[in-house]
Amino acid sequence: MAKAVDALVIEQIKSYGNAMGQSTIDTIFWSGRFAEAFVGKFYLLPRVEVKKHLCHTGAAKDTNVKQALVDRFAYGVRNHGKGIKSDPGFFYGFVGDVYAAMGVAVTWWDQNARDSEI
Image 1: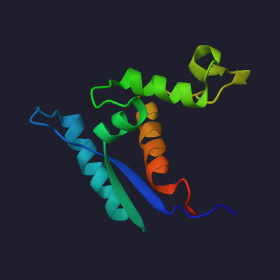
Image 2: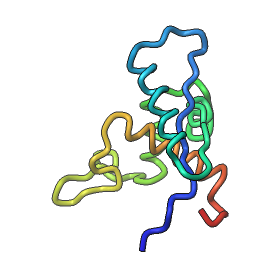
Image 3: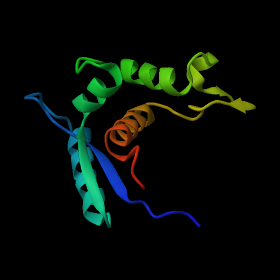
Image 4: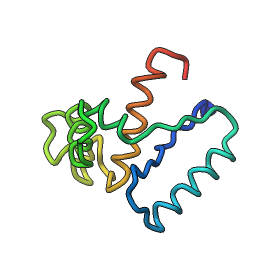
């Protein structure tokens, strides 16, 4: 039997004075809806915290976050840990924002849940 989910972690969106497009506004809306519907505790984790945790600098880019994840979970594995269909790797099927979501999850886990019962 699967264990119930105890925590929901959402990447907190901050504009830092920059203009936001419609897709960002939609993401903010849906983040709120997910938090509202979740039965349990939810956490907001700013992207800059993910960058600092994984890359040791807030100036890191998405490619740096992706490489930090590859270095941690698939170091030395060809094709950045993706593998191939007949021999899938840890990151097989990961595209685009999935790496960002994994970065949020790993950061939150390292900072909050590693030694807990979650």
